[in-house]
Image (cartoon, rainbow, N blue to C red; front, top):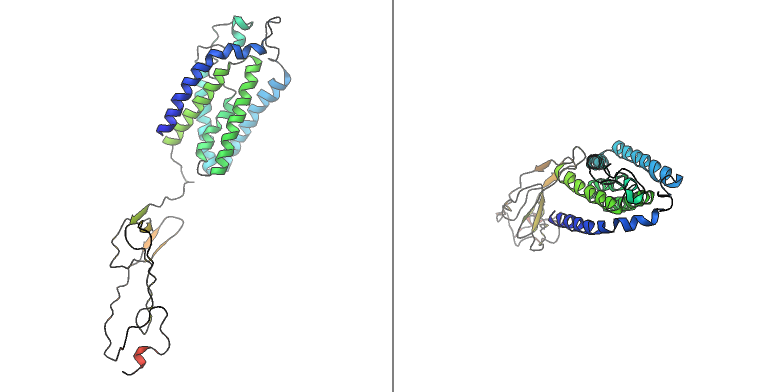
Length: 293
């Protein structure tokens, strides 16, 4: 979390510095003779690049809602990001390039231009990225799509004179900040799998022993492990009960059953017991009990 906040702080500083080049980056798209941005009403940018992309991403958002689970949670984050960006833009005192006198505009006090709203079509996917973070492959695809779509939408608006380049970068910054905030405060509901707490105990890793019906105990299935010790899912660290551990079972719902361990006591047999049975194999049909000393 601290790393993400540090990245946000550093990115904000870089965006402030980059804003010094806003006018230089917009100048190539401005025609001083026409005193306008020639691409402002270009069909390719205004229709597919603006309106078409917007409705395509709305359809994608609706699909995420229908899919449910982490996708629906991501759709919620995306909606929050879009709402925050829209509110900030609405109350912003900064005007768009095509409203400024330097770029042929006549409304320098129009405001309502920072951050850029159209690039949020892509940058809102930051919310979906964090919702799908456990699925590394899908999350990487979504993150790449967020940057590609967001920057492409931003480039369209810069070329049309609707925004400065820094407006697009601030949209990305705000979207990422809101996504982090939403992901850290909202808990998954319903779709989250039960979380099993792992408790470790030092010493020997053991398994449940088996006892034969008519002879000494069969070879115990003890296995020494690394110093990290035994892992018990869903159970607190418990004493190992003199080398034996109770059998446990669990199901997908997260319920854990702890069956009592069987105590085993070995005593010399009065009917004869020449030597301890071999523990490398099970007792045969003719056990030591059937032999006379």
